[in-house]
Image: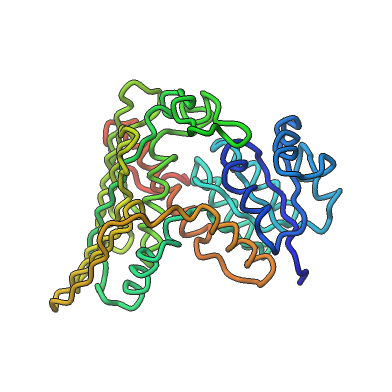
Length: 360
C-alpha cells in the first residue's frame, strides 16, 4: 500500500471546510487532497483557504479520478439530498467512502450503496463521531461482553441547538469568528427538498446510529412516530416508538429547540436482561447498574467533540486495510430505515410503518 493517502472531498460547503479539510491538512499520512464541487468557485474558495492547488479542483468525481488515478477514497459532505448521487459516483470510480450522515434520505438508496460497495469490495465508513468518545467505547465493550445481557428496551433522547438552522437562519448559528470559508445556505437544513427532513435527519441520525452501534443485531421492524414542525417547514420535535427485529422495544425522541448555552444531550439508555447502561455523547456521562448490584459511574464532564477522528479512521482504512467502526450497513442503512419509516408514519398521523414496506 502507498505511504500516504490520496483523497477527494466531494462537496466543499461548511462542514467540509470546517471539519474535514483542517483535519486533512494536519494529518501526516495524507499526501494529496482533491476537491470536487459542482460549483467550481466553491471548490476554489476552499482550495485558496487551505493551500490546495487550484488544479486539484473539479466539478465531477469522474473528472477528478481521470486526472488523479491514484485516488483511493472520497469524503462525501454534500447536502443531504445529494448524498446518494455523490456516493454512487465515488463507488463507480472504485473509491472507498467516508460518508457524512445521514447516509441517504431514502432506505432504498442506502441499500443500493451498501450492495454496490460490497460487490466491489469497497468500504463505507459513516461520519458519526460520538462512538469514538471513551465513555461510549466503554459502553460498547461492556455490552459486547454480555454484561447487561440481551437488550430488551432502549430509551434514546437528543436535545440540541438547531432550531435556527431548521428555520432557515444559519446566520444566527454562525460562530463568533465566522465560518472558515462559507456557512450553510438558508435552504441547507430548512428546505425539505434539500435537507430531506429536519431534526430527524440532522440530529436523530446521530442518536439512532449510536443505538444500533451499541445494540448488536438490532434493526427496526415497525415504527410509529409523531413530529412537530413548530414554525419550520421541517420537523423540530420528534417522538418515535419502535419494535426491533430482536423483539426489543425502543423510544427515540428529540427536540431542536434549545438555546445557546444549553449543552443538550445525546443519550442512549439500554436496558438488558442483566442490567442497564446509560451513556451521553454530549456530557460524557456513563452509568451502569447490573442486576447483581455492580455499578459504575462516570459523572458529567466535557468530553470534547472528536470531529477529526472519522478522518483518522478513514486513513487507516485506506492505508492499513482497517475495517470501519461505523460501517455503512449497520450505522448507515439501519439508521435511514428508521428515519424514513418515522417520517412516513408522522405524515400519516402515527400510522405504524413496517420497514419492509420501504422496499415494496
